[in-house]
Length: 444
Image (cartoon, rainbow, N blue to C red; front, side, top):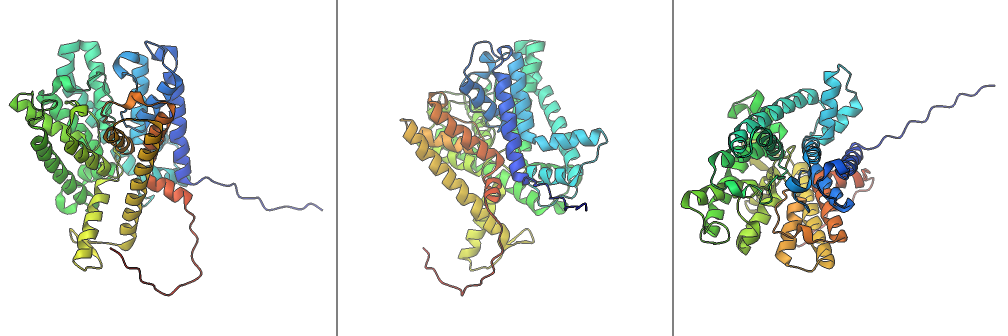
């Protein structure tokens, strides 16, 4: 007699784990491509290639070799492609390709896309993805055209257009990769550079959800609460950081002190704007005062917006933390903002994210101090920059040994895939069957 056994369900990987594996696979492919003889003008080690690939995929911008001189046109193209794929997310590109080919996008793919875009719902993801593509292509094209006004007259049509495209993609994806050894310091007072580059990384740093809101609704009254918080927080942080940087560095001969008056203003705006997300620089970061370095570390830790190409704990996370603190001191049980109420679950998520991020940064600093003897401030600055995928450095990136590089690469990777993603992956959801009486813990 023939017995028919029920088919065992095929075990499926959790969406966060799939995204982690995808990003890790892209880093591995990028490492192999950058190690090809065609990609480099001079031989590099596997460690150099792996570090560059990790930095590009995580859109960080920390480098151990000069991108413009060590890598050939082919190698620079690989770096730019890794930046684009890493910044926007591989699942976004996969879904776009499937939809353009007329192929159905299954529920599993939508779950992966939901995780990649950090959305709470799997509905309307295809529409959001198409809006993302339109915004990205439009912004990067306009940015490349504007940058060509600067680079083409100086470097010629071929090299100038390539520099314009590369820096436009790098800026919009908040990567901070530049083809020049001193980043963009040569154009510290150039209005086109100081307006175009920040516009690109601010737009990319606002997040795709905000970009979709701006594209579709175009009215403050109809914007979502997330969009209102992001726009308000971004403007406030930009204004505060610009004024603070100018006041703290105005007479510092290593940064603003030797510049003309107008160039000091441009540099203050550019450096304050790029610190939270992008990592470009027009002044020497290693010459910053200790107070400014601490302020920069704070800005980097806050980072950009959710569902954006930037890192950090996110602007909305920082705002909710501040609102929760204010609500506590005002003896309020709920948080109200812009006519909306934030629930306890969102506050708990914010606290978890901030706690995990802080512990990760502190543990990473401790490990780097064990492997690398040097300036504590420089190591702490480097670690926060890696976690927030900013790419700003005080000049010690190339000094790390293999162990130090491994720590920085791990921090960049976690900073990109998100501490909460790893937390949800490791956590198990088991409903409690036992209730306990309430207790009191004395705090503060």
